[in-house]
Image (tube, rainbow, N blue to C red; front, side, top):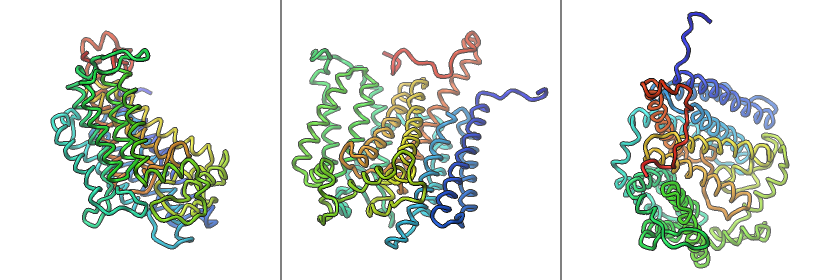
Length: 474
């Protein structure tokens, strides 16, 4: 139409984001209404308030990103808000089941409050951190803080099932491991930018692969020992796996040496076998994983094992391909952690395999956007940080989904965005802010180059051109 100016690249991205956010709000409100109809035969009494809350969150988040990161990836915010909204829908549904069966408190209102706090923290981080490369100045301070947070739960009482994951701050229970995964990604990104040349040195050839020389095994050995200490003293299998896995992935991306992957897998397997053979808590989880039905309906001491693994498999089996319908299953049969560790079981039972695959696809898209940001970032630190954050998200989803489906032993971690937990939600929204900042910086620089003399010669250059190597400068 005449008189209308074409959208700028930033404007086009934000328009796409706004449309996807509107779709996100519609999906979550429809899901909440559907669950209410199934549970009570009527629309939920708080449907209007829920719709208004989701709409306001989407609007404020969109305006904040438009103001502080106008060139950011248009899919990241809608994906994060959709997963968070689906989590609120599931928690409302689970609150109904658990309160009716066991009494207790509702968790969905508190999760909504934490959602507001998480989105606010995301926007605050975007406003304060105008250049992600500033974080590179504080990598050792970041790692020191991460070590303190990693060690803190070891001095706290164990939870009901034997693990030490929480600390109490001002009356609030906080899970430090959720913030540690971001801190270690920041530290490893800065560390590998400086030391990747020495770590890329090749050693002897073994089975067709160049293994790293022994003198360069110090960093990976240090991280391996730290992850084992977390497993031994805190019995937190999930954090230990994520901590070590993120480092190995980032090390491989920085050096492009498959030998580091081989070393990482061998060390992880050896450490897991050694600790699993000696640590009763880990040994019990492995035993329940190998034969979950032998522990079903048996009375066992807390911290030894439970029947949740078997109940999760029953839930997935009863859901079939399309599920029983939202609000029509029996998630209350999983008495413990049904709203956190086992929330994916509710998805499998009530939405079926189709629902589980849809949720996993949302996570896969979010990870893919993070990896795409790594390819598009101009600076090595931004590349590695985006890879580290995407790897942390992917590993956490894997250990949770793998645990509840019986692929690996249960780890005690919860699905990002979807499951109950304020500290987890806050940490994940901070991760979203970092991804948005990296993508905004990369696209802003690309647009500046496109407008310059060099960029004018190639107006059709793709927005995300793949660099020659994973980290430039070699």
